[in-house]
Every structure is written in structure tokens, then in C-alpha cells.
Length: 114
Image 1 (cartoon, rainbow, N blue to C red):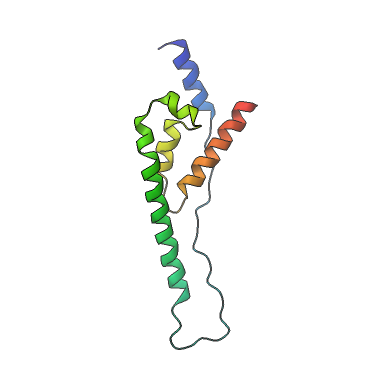
Image 2 (tube, helix red, strand yellow):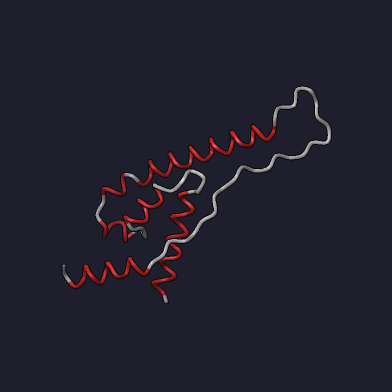
């Protein structure tokens, strides 16, 4: 192992990814008057939440899977690291992976500045 590889590996060990809270469905509005044909608003909010989560994760995969084929220098030029992208792709569905990558990027920039 070269000295540069050892230095780079120690840099990765110092960095800790941010802890993120999972997203949750929005609470439906409270209606003053319920009609017989009023849809179940909590159910509709939950379905909308999961559809949005799946669409966003599909969007992330479509954007970032091709980037994993690029070399590490190119990823560093755009501000990402391969391990961060792989980490974000393996997050649970309730955690927004795009927000997680952005938080990880900000944390890495802050740790490099100090």
C-alpha cells in the first residue's frame, strides 16, 4: 500500500455520516364537516407519501447509478464520493437519499475546512 492510499483511508475513517430522521406522511387536515362521500384522508396521505418516496428513490437511482461507473476523480470534481453514493442507495426508503447525500456533502466540506 502506498503512503497516499494509507493517508486517504485514514481520512475516510475520520468522517462520520450525518444521522438523519426518517420522513413521515403529512397529517391530513381536520374537516369540520364530514360528508358520506368524504374519502379517508389519512389513507390518502399515506398512499401519497409512499408514491412520492418510491418516485424519489427511482429518480435517485436513475441519476446516481451511472455515476458509479465513473472514476473517483470525476466524482470528487462534482463533490461526491463513491462510498457516499453507495451508502445513500442502501438507506431505508423512509429516509430521503437525496437529502442524505446533500447533508453528507455539507458535513464533508465542513470537516475538510476545519
